[in-house]
Amino acid sequence: SVPLAGRRVLVTGASRGIGAAIVRRVAGDGASVAFTYSDSADAAEKLVAEVAESGGTVVAIQADSADPEQVARSIDETVTQLGGLDVLVNNAGILPAAPIETLTIEQFDRLVAINIRSVFAATKAALPHLDSTGRIINIGSINADRVPLSGMSIYAMSKAAVAGMTRALARELGPRGITVNNLQVGPTVTDMTAEEGEIADTLRGVMALGRLGQPHEVASVVSYLAGPESGFVTGANWNVDGGFTV
Ligand code: NDP
Image (cartoon, rainbow, N blue to C red; front, side):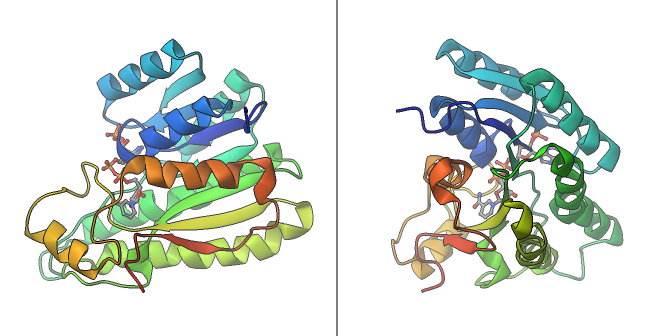
């Protein structure tokens, strides 16, 4: 079956990791996909080639999520290239982990720009294009609710902000049929979270499944939320976390 046939999806920050897995999955499910990246042009090019090779429609757009004008431009380019927009996946994010004594104001501002302000900017720019089947899917973190490691102050703050924005926007956009959800992802093997080492051991120790997640295990949930069968799910801060919080 092609559950996402005719759907036009933009995934932010998807040259690597969870975003790239979302691109592969929704393209495989029949959607036309655009994605943004900032620095990893080679990885973005490879992803485009891979998805195109397997018959998918995919476009890469260079746009720094820290810059609201570039974010807005990426929405416009998506609409031009794909002929519209149905689903926005706010995935781009950074994880500056350090004790509060060493975190700088500049790191704080950059994190807020990428992890929070870009979600606001992309959502604002996407809304005029979304109809009553529109979907906004945020990639948050279980660290909004639980923080077993030290050094996570501003990251956890940013993902709690996304959770709050998700609830409020679900309320605001519900009358238009647009759903807004937030996947509170648990430790998942990407460049952000290594599979081996002391940190990984600590994380596994608090997870019911006793293992880290794989990017495709997040992407499958995104595909469900992007599709026609999830229309009654909105305002959810949905834990996809291997039992990190149980
Ligand atoms: P990675 O570090 O593996 O990949 C991050 C992606 O975001 C890259 O494609 C990168 O592109 C892009 N990106 C980063 N900064 C920018 C920017 N300024 N503008 C545009 N794109 C940007 O991270 P993950 O895949 O692990 O994380 C994806 C999301 O999932 C994040 O929001 C993260 O907080 C969240 N998450 C991850 C968890 C994990 O354990 N991995 C757990 C919980 C949540 P480029 O290299 O081209 O700049």
